[in-house]
Image (cartoon, rainbow, N blue to C red; front, side, top):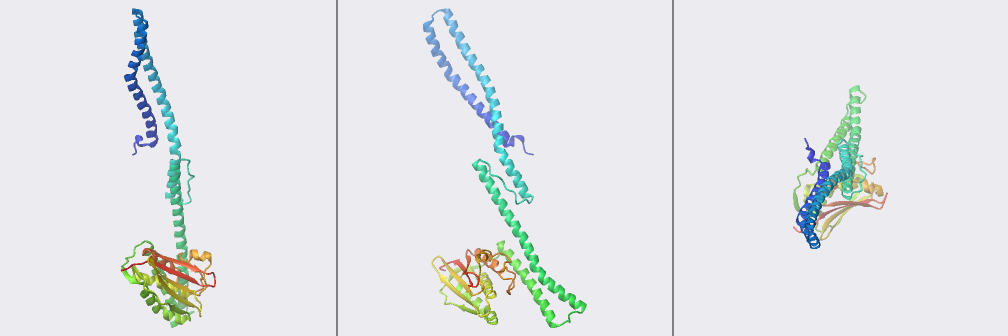
Length: 367
């Protein structure tokens, strides 16, 4: 149990009283040392004026009266100062602790899940800074909770379609509506594969965002990695009728994880393929400076407007739901993987119908 003396209010009141007593003791010590000298000097002057015994008695009575009166005044002043110190300490502690109590109440409400709780900054600069920090924490918690709820909704949405399709096929087979043909089993298998891919992507995304990946950094040439990805995806470009061109790349030396960078380029190039219509093209180029190396993937696809440029890396975001592709997690994973390797990924577009360019940049290395 917290002791009463541990209370900040009690300590503040006691500190005011302590100041009073320290002041009184200081006055008392100074008076004890200096007052007799001052009084004796005054008495010698009086003795020079009065040489009689009556004068001497009057001087002695004067000295005793001064010292007694001063002691009484000091005693009464100490009592009054203590009372005033208690009153001022109580008022000052209330003024200071009232906003602190408000902050405590707000933090308890935040802990209970009321993430919309906010605190009005008090006039004291230090407490206002504390209130602003608590408000920033509340805003972060509220944003996190909204993302969590949105993620649950989006995952449920992505699961609903393949599950409904599989359920429909299975019920059709059981009821005899569909014949047990290879086409039905192939379609069911595709939906099951879609569910498996979604589960794999979600697991991968969770590991990336939690920084739980085991990255194996090595000095590599990003040009070799991107050319390998282009060769592997070339058949898909041929099937869709989209041209894929890789420019003559300079040495792009970087310290990175080869497999993870291959995953990044696969996601970005695959995204460009999904949103580039037949007859379009995707062009890959690279650049190297003393500070970093970059690879750009430019397509002639549907393009992005200003709002889409800000949300294209969000989880489950798809600029065109009708376009073939995954669940909208690929670019999110790519961004997280690049950032984990101390790099950046940016997107630019001339607007709808003018294609988009994704640029991946990593710190350069001389190794």
